[in-house]
Image 1 (spheres, rainbow over the protein chains, first blue to last red):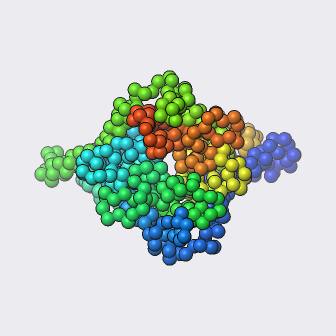
Image 2 (spheres, rainbow over the protein chains, first blue to last red):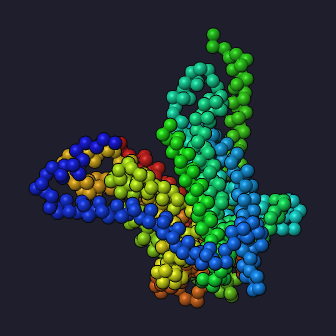
Length: 311
Length: 289
């Protein structure tokens, strides 16, 4: 933006108040807030450095890339032959996140279209606030709901012995991710300029035709960004997944199998490991992988969403 | 002349159908949560009393109150706010008032997005590696709070930046043309007009911080302590961790106890969020520009 008569340029013209107290304070504050801004970058690099530092011993020593990625034997505490294969954990995370997205994507996109295009005034305000409040429910409470309520429902409805499984965690995670996806998707729909809608309506299109043929294609990237952020959220969720999946190492063959997720493994085992042991370092190595994957997901979502704003 | 054609009517019907479909999808998203909240209130409500909130647990956690956990959560939130609010506001002032539009600013924004998107358990690992081990805080309130502060920093930054940017440019220009420096302008004109917006962000952060579990599990929160924490280098109990443990790891707990803890936690969080939303709507209604 063009800022007329910015104090920066003016101070340079006026030699007499260069050593002024106000000028000095101004420069000091500028430096302080710059450090504040820098802190975000320093912290994200710090996170990477510190988890890499703790995981490094494993990567340099016991780490076997093929075993790590392609073996489903996660036996870190075995005395004779500890193995660190995370394939089953990846399968657990993927199955739960996948089911969650099957639940959450249609519902949250549908809700976003309804809120943005079909509702107005008080209804709209009410729905937006409700969605915002749903997004605020802590993950440990969701986990408790999975454990105490969903567990019993699943056992009753499907007549299975254990209700802590992919289905339970998938539904819980879907309900958790949906509010966030809904509000980001709704923003994307609102960002489509009204003149697009007006032009289509002037051509005789009905409300639904406007949405289907004009608004949705125009908001495509924003909606994709919303879905990606939902995936990232599901992928990184810890407490709810720890409590609702049943936490047993398994490559699932049906939604009624109990599984174990990457994040939940760290949460369940870190407390029991000795600092510096292979097990401890292997957990940090899982952390590095989680960091890398979510970094890529967030970066992609940001690029896609920003693409919309430019276009 | 303006009679509806058959095509119009067909389109009308289709539109109504979709409206109904999408409306019921929205309802289906909200309804289960309402039912769940109802269940929490129904099963946890009866146990909640003054004693439940303000006495210590007894009988190996199976009876008594949750006071140390409640107090611990409050302590964790306060220390986390002391760290993240000044830092977050400084970052937001930089981004809104100083930052040029260049690669460096984009890098900061990207870092903020990633801080918000990194899984909470990775923040926990960072807390262990950095605060517990490297800075030698041990498992303590300060280590847990700093981990929480970093995790929730994006909430403050984003809310503050938005409320700073909502202050019209003309206010700043008027101030500059009176000879004020950039900081004098921010201090006397921009911040006073943005302060309530910043407050809504801080309240949101409180709510977010109070509900987090994973980041504090290994950095400073423990399930049981005989004494209340005496300083920031002590460990503490916390409500979120308390819920996790009473619902998963302690046998012989009466069913209403975890429901009661869940209800207290969720009420705290939702009240805080509602307050923040109400404040935001009040500001929006009052705004004159």
